[in-house]
Length: 325
Image (cartoon, rainbow, N blue to C red; front, side, top):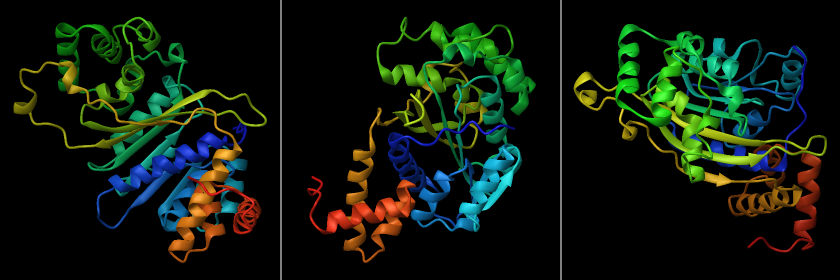
């Protein structure tokens, strides 16, 4: 597979730190299992997780590109780097899986998401990042849902939603049982009047396919870099919970309140290097207050070269930079 990775934007470095801080806060207070991520050449998630105290041996970084996996393994020799399909690395011992796609929530990405969700244990966390504003590429059909599960009782549940619901809930359900294709663009701009509702439309395929998903939060950012104009991205964080028993769902028949809204984690837009530097200065102050190696901590958490963090640290120590308010 050809490596099309174009590097990370400043916004991505910051939103990733916020995402993992939220995700690790939500993890059950038990001995941690594996955390499975998509690798990329740089291994940005591996870097941030290591800075947060996760043992590299607990991190499984997967890439379908052999060259990218090899480069990630060179950078992070203590992590478990795998060349292959990320679905194969998700097990009942996985605590968190994060699918950071550089693509819309379309056929292939949804197929991978549903397969990963089917393998996750109850209580595990599922994160996903994908291009927003490309909803025409996200038409759903039976193939994606069959990849994870579509037994007779699930079909009955979805058909009940088709009979009793309106709008996008009905359209999603019809798509999942293969009766018609669905594109969120048919609804965005026509039905929804807030970004919260639009984000709900984008993530609803996952919540319809897995009604026992609890939505925990969502973020937005712009992926622009020096070599790429970038695209707007959105990230969602969910917990897989135990399915409700029959008595809990009887009579509800797919009402909108069955679908949990997401908490907005923040819109990081198209921030520049100055924002990353300001966050590094905050990390320096935290590290100094807790007797930590400030340069190493900032380098890991923000996935920046140690030389860059060291230069910022030197300027900060000499008072070249103003204090962060």
